[in-house]
Image (cartoon, rainbow, N blue to C red; front, side, top):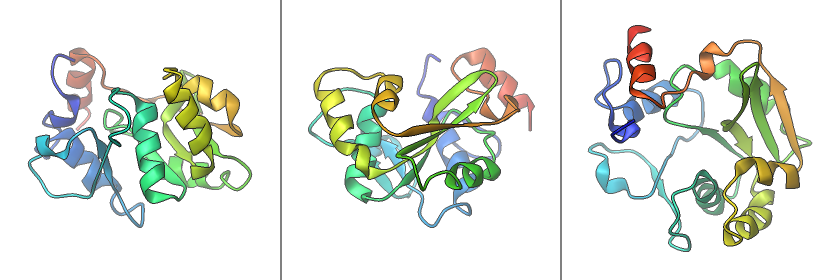
Length: 172
């Protein structure tokens, strides 16, 4: 992207992070922002910083840090998917009971950062990070995972490139 996506202006919000936070606060009992360091954010929120045990920048380290701190199932949403609906998480949650990871899947593919994870995956997750294996798909092969199908790719639109960011801004 060329800059920190989390700090990009989005909609009427000063940052994409604030946009996401304001959008999902009513969906959940508690909402946290996962980050390496909260100092880059110029607003107040509940933050979970990555554990000091690992130096890597990795979604697995973030998930490990979140689960270690909260010790409860957590819904994960990456900052760069601003169109995911509340209904996605309602459908994921309905499938949580018998699984350790519940992952959204659309015709485009699976969305590991639009998911719910249980703390029971922590030992497997820690070992994988220590083995320097940061592929979420590898983790999901080792834990009890279910993929929940969604017909619409639109809400999983991801902002990875400047053109995608510009396209997302036009949707307002």
